[in-house]
Image (tube, rainbow, N blue to C red; front, side, top):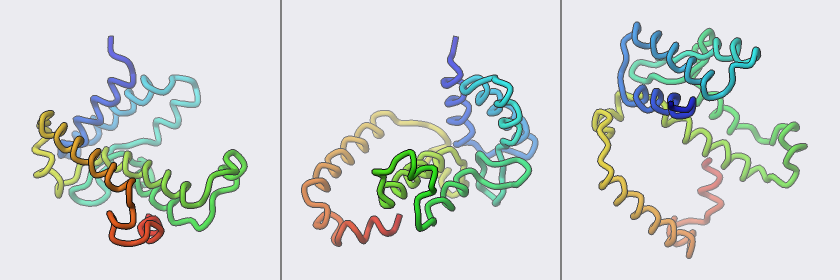
Length: 170
């Protein structure tokens, strides 16, 4: 029997690489809601929260997770948090050692992970219509692990500028 996580990941993987019609968006929303409940919880508080979710197309050619009634992409919410000039008090209190740069980096990583859930017409060509070449992926991963090792030895030389300048762009 598949786990809730496996079900949710399977649905998200399929949807993030497939352009849907308006009717299909509604069915996708229902399937992801079920996956969220199976993965997260079926406690009383989960049901009204999951009902706020929708697989939306707010902008033409971009479909993905959002808030149903507000027509807001979830990735846009995280992106907006990155623009704050301070760490929210609740996070500061929980993680007093957290720097603003690391807070922003953490939000950017969350945004990168979340943005992968979206289907975009502009990326359909490079995503090869959802076909996945494991050998090519392994080569790309290996090449980037090597690049990470080179970067770690001398970030400034690798980037061609001070690391602080790159971090400020997050």
